[in-house]
View 1 (cartoon, rainbow, N blue to C red):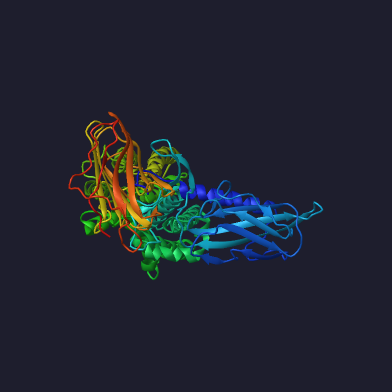
View 2 (view 1 turned 90 degrees about the horizontal axis):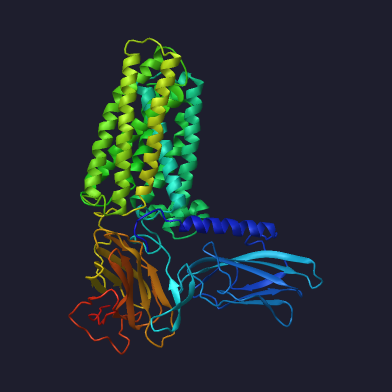
Length: 621
């Protein structure tokens, strides 16, 4: 579970791990799945099987005696090696290889790559098979030994970072609530390319109809379109993998992109953007279509619709309709401003020229004023709508504040460049070398700052704004407040439905409001004597905010009296393992005896060094 406090990189890490594993398979001569060597007679689980429960062992059966065997396992693109699995053991018949599975495999696709040696020591066949685990007590991330309070050793399941809130679909997250390194990079490249492409076409239509006659301008537009297509493809691939909580490589399949249609408006906008970017090739191949009256309307409408998809990246929050409208205005105005600046710096002012270049610079001065005003006003509306007064206490607000400062610097540089242009080109009929060089440097500086601002805009979508409501309508079965006057820690931990299986977790951090929080962790200890895993969940909140997991996320393996523990550090001290008991019901909603006695009082931690155990109110199924 992750609050949107930064650009998470787990999907990028899994993608890199999958890439390394693939390279390893290629180097060892492994065959693709479904093209197994003839010497493998059967496997258990069978290739392509869907398992209701994780396998306890892997069995490979060959048609002839074999020598040493190497087996490499990966689940969700993440290596599943020792001690999660044992070493391959060859049976007495020298035809059967068994690999013990010590830790239940997580939900998702798993692949098994094998290679054997002949009894005489020569290299033997290689191959690969795969299967899918449908349910498992172990989520992706695995388990590792840990120690519970009191010194007893117990296995701990560390739940990996996921979305800040779940979507209505239990397997597909909301696209506006997931992010990682690959998603951020693709999103930023896509937004930059679209802005430059659209802003350049607008400037050509408004003030530089001679533009398509310049081979430099045509090459520039085509290069920008290629960059936009690459960035958008990367964005769609990474986003589809993120909403499905799978590895980056899984998003390479176009079939997985259709899941974005179930991932909210941000997911649908991503698909629409890809289609519109591809359609924009019709305009880029012949840019004169934007000034031809017979083709001008569709030629400018296609990139306009593509830019509008940027405004649908976030549709929630207070006054949602106003937010969507301001998002669309902000996207179009930003593209006109930044795209025009980049076209001037890279093409129009590339060297001296005739009067049409002067008219292009003057025309940009006219349209950029309106674009700047619209960008600033719509940005301020979004700032107050999503952040309010939390610019310093919330991560989203701090990044937005940095972006605002850079926009102000960009505005200052831009106004200075326009004053220089007005002074030098006020009565000019051509563009001299000296004037072109000076203006190119000024507009180039403005463009560079704009690129940085776009990168921050992509980063902002990795955070949850403090005023963005999440998980409305969920009636949590367990709601436990933790308040510590010594450290100032004030949070509420909620669990739903608090039954055996996968549950939803919500953590609302209300204090401290200043100074920040580090190391916030919630641990769930199973009933005494159950010999089940301890579940440990890091909470990536550093200030007031809400972190929400998907609906089917937190694994409880047994019913009974569980213990919820909270640990965190604030500027005034550390809270260690403050705990409260709560009931986990059976899968059908029954109470496992003995039941926890209800009490009307809420657990309150009175000291940063004292662990207070208080009973919880009776939970409901």
